[in-house]
Length: 255
Ligand SMILES: NC(=O)c1ccc[n+]([C@@H]2O[C@H](COP(=O)([O-])OP(=O)(O)OC[C@H]3O[C@@H](n4cnc5c(N)ncnc54)[C@H](O)[C@@H]3O)[C@@H](O)[C@H]2O)c1
Image (cartoon, rainbow, N blue to C red; front, side, top):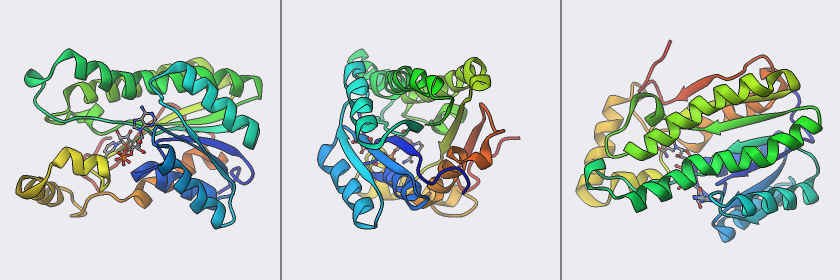
């Protein structure tokens, strides 16, 4: 894809699941990738996979819920890989359960990671992008933020917030070259989904019923999401601004 080769990116949460797939795919396109994750060992494993395949990646351990750690993590990636042209805010977390059984302590952790996390990262990176003449930001929200998801009330609120924030930030900075878009995965086969579905028979039943509901009759895989992220980061997508795109095998369809 045009405009990716030689660019530097930060992908949060790329130690695992969808983010790992995005980091590997960007690296295939010649992007130098900073893997920023709370799980330092996992981040290192992703970076090694990229470097062993001939790419260029560094791993940084940071909690996106902490502004200072975001600033230090981004500075470390910049020092190793140069000017950051692409930011993928992918890291996310949830603990599923009925809203009425949850407590404010859990809400706070979910909001800190899923809403403050992307805000922290963008507040650190956008000024650098503006100074350097532009950049691409891809925020990984969720279909939960568009259509809701039982057991994920506060998480859905954060993802809906990320979608609204992405549109507003786009309006503020697009003409200065910083382009923001959102990608909404549908149910995808990752450790986060396994946690959401739960263990044993109940988990198997939920998975099977979702597979029946998805027109393509399967959960998403990391490769299903990664191509769109690479496309949005590339110059092929320079005129796509403030959009929210679902990748869900057809489970949700929006016009
Ligand atoms: N899997 C799905 O069904 C699904 C559906 C819709 C949206 N999403 C979204 O896709 C993104 C990736 O999810 P996944 O399914 O690959 O999950 P995952 O659990 O496999 O990976 C998430 C990664 O984020 C990292 N992370 C979590 N909290 C962090 C923090 N505070 N600071 C830094 N890193 C942190 C984890 O260590 C992990 O490496 C998330 O934003 C998630 O909300 C996933």
